[in-house]
Length: 261
Image 1: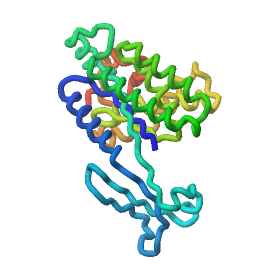
Image 2 (image 1 turned 90 degrees about the vertical axis):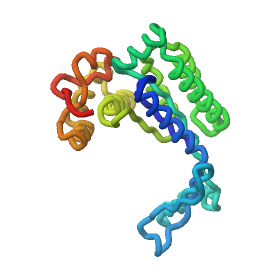
Image 3 (image 1 turned 135 degrees about the horizontal axis):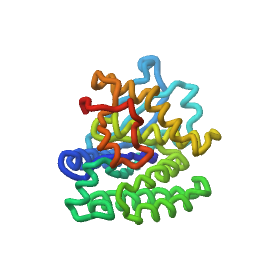
């Protein structure tokens, strides 16, 4: 099972440590095996059970009878699902710009970011190549486009994200987005992903995308998440900071301010 993680952390100072810790934990998911069993009367709350260590962990998930009956026979017979996690990171704020200057990478991403994205592209390619016979026909072309986009090696190359997201969905995977606090840059990212899904699948005109994003960010759950975490109904951005963001990642005036991050 493919799980695609997207992060928007800066490869420098504290956030570099956060990214390194996150990547280590995410890669440990490769040691997780998931197995499904029919729920019993003693487990009607459907509580999963965990066995093993960080080096080999088995998760047993009980399912109601009607759901268990829909599983492929192989899973009914006790086969496990292995997790294949991949991570792409693009720093998008002013600190990412400063980190590139410090490393003398004026027209490209930092080496840490490049290495992470290259390595995880290789992991994704290996997974797709192994599974290609059971995946949609357009996956190989999407993979070529993703590889080309990653190797452009340009700063703040957020064009990587929509391609990785599309491949993940086409490969029946799970999507995760994160940043430092999971409420500011993350909100800009997942609302953009939602807006692009509307454009691609629900006949929303591309020209209306920015208006859709503004509605999501002003009236959706993301700003309520900011309120729940900080007590202020605002994203923790400044005007100058947002000028360094890629265009579609900028919060609209009236939705951000100098609040706790």
